[in-house]
Length: 264
Image 1 (cartoon, rainbow, N blue to C red):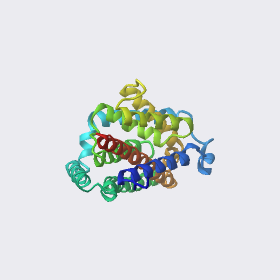
Image 2: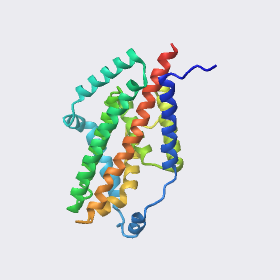
Image 3: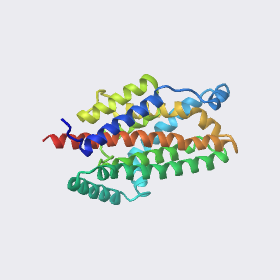
Image 4: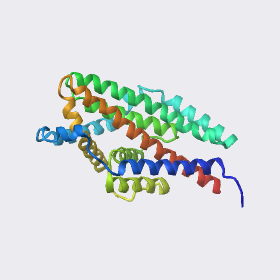
């Protein structure tokens, strides 16, 4: 009757609470005063330009840029750290070892958030907005790639790329869109397949449209010298949201896998 909870049960409960907190915090979106101020100043056609820029960035990186991104971190080292954490977890089965995966993922997230913020501010001060999109997209994917590796997942597989695009889109969505995307992510985690038949091109398009819509006003502001530094600073905010959501969902994948193994 009074059996104590295992380390996994405690961490699973904690994860569910953190996921709910993220959803509650982001389900209702309210535009900032800065966005309200810029609403009437954004030129017609900028949205379409951003759509194309983000779409092209994802295409190029997925097709040719992953090798370049991998030169910016030590993939083998992260994989070795995961294997070591997995060994300790299997040996001790305690909460500390379960937390090690998240700790490493959060560390890489913080570093990439800082890099994105600094580069955004620097380019914004020079009035460079649209050209920053490729750099921002590359850093965004690098961030999620590292989080995936810290939880033992290979980001180079087609379904994994679709999952990553789903996470990016979910992290920056709100309302019913966020609910739907979160359910889709959880379904994939539980079943290893998607509820939607969307192909890679459609997944890229959806993620690109979401990013361009969310970053529209900040990229417009970033294109204005000096004051553009403020718009560039928002890169860090968006990166942080993606980091948080990706860490939660990859942690759910690992914990779901462990819970299934414990039942056998």
